Every structure is written in structure tokens, then in C-alpha cells.
Image 1: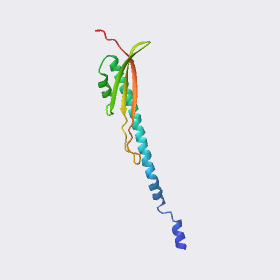
Image 2: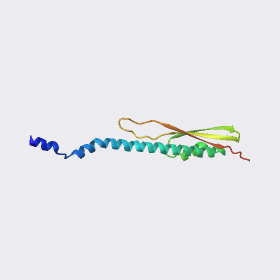
Image 3: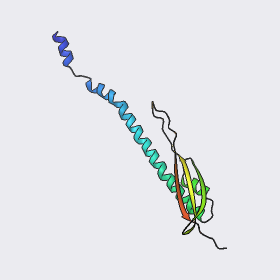
Image 4: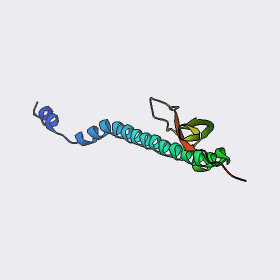
Length: 127
């Protein structure tokens, strides 16, 4: 009986068991943090690409090429529309960016698309 009690009070290996139990949660937390960073990066790149495209479209240039150059490494699609305000004509460029995702265990690969738009006053070019 003393032998059983002695082994029951022995805590050798308990730290290893606790680490093995907590390690998957640590990995999931790191994957989640990485995915949030990818989403934040995509938001910043999409907004920047929309602004660059609107600047180019305002002077009548190829806004699509400007958007693709600004969004290097992210899959984007863009569209432009013209409108008028009380200040005059303006051009709006809308960018749709696909968020790069990592495959998270038990959740799978997520598929999200973000949209950003920017407007600039249309500049009249005198020839």
C-alpha cells in the first residue's frame, strides 16, 4: 500500500503532460494570429491599390494596370465608375481583393474577399 501511495504522490512527468495538453491550443492561437495579420495586410493593400487606381483614372490612364502593380502578390479585380458631385466630375475605383488564407486544422481553408474603393476628382486634360 505504501508503494501505491508513493507513486500517487510522485509528480514526475506532469509538466510534460500539461505541455502536451496545451500545445495544440498554442499552435491554433499562432495560426489565428497569422490569419488576422494576412487579413490586415490585404485590407491595407486593397485600399492602397484603390487609391492608386483612382489617381490614375482621374487623369485618364490605365487604372487596372495601376491597381495590379499596387496590389503585388494579392489577387485583385477592379472596376471604375464616373459620377458627378457638387464639386464636379469624379471617378471611383473599386477593388475586390481575395484574402490569402492558411489551412487551419479542423476548420479548413477560408474563402473571403474584401472590397475597397477610392474616389478622386476627374481632371480635365487640355490638348
